[in-house]
Length: 123
Image (cartoon, rainbow, N blue to C red):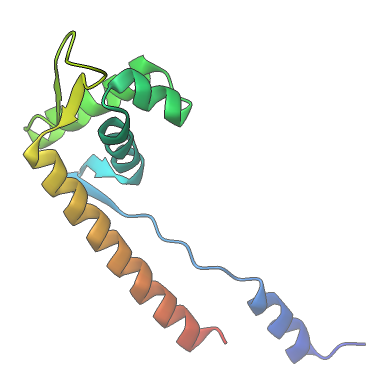
């Protein structure tokens, strides 16, 4: 029969830390990881339609989330050009690139701290 401490140790070994990070304005959601993935997809695809397809989401959903974030933040995040040259119909604004970069850097640092603390406390 296993001792109590070995049961405890095996349970700890299955633990994995998780962290959700998002930004709020006046207590309301404004920006998070899901939206950051959408903006990155827009940047890669050059269009909202291409981004939505790459993410397995509808155009309407991605466009709606971008518009909600723009309203919350009070800044345009995606510039669209109807009939834009080549396949580049949408691009991130400089404000979106800055927000995205800062958010991802902050999230990465928080995940790094989480891993360090988890390693210290849950060996």
